[in-house]
Picture 1 (cartoon, one colour):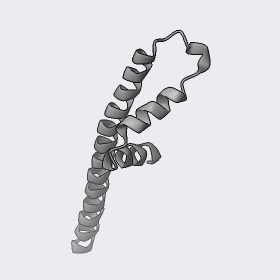
Picture 2 (cartoon, rainbow, N blue to C red; picture 1 turned 180 degrees about the vertical axis):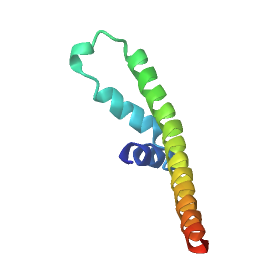
Picture 3 (tube, rainbow, N blue to C red; picture 1 turned 180 degrees about the horizontal axis):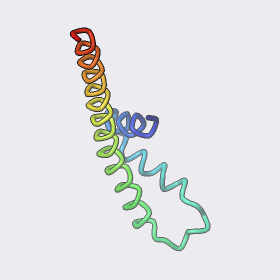
Picture 4 (cartoon, one colour; picture 1 turned 120 degrees about the vertical axis):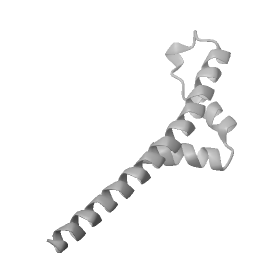
Length: 82
């Protein structure tokens, strides 16, 4: 759950620009032939889609755990009635 929490904290504190710049600075030096604008665009897309995926992942995890909890609760109550 670390990547979703990272991307949601980036979104919460409005650090998209700084995160993109950090990702570009971490780009391997051997791939220097790629233009800075292209690297920046890829980093911006990674941050944007990472925030979207993080929100979806946490939402689906919450829904999944809720369904599991309710299913187990109903399963136990059904076993007591029999």
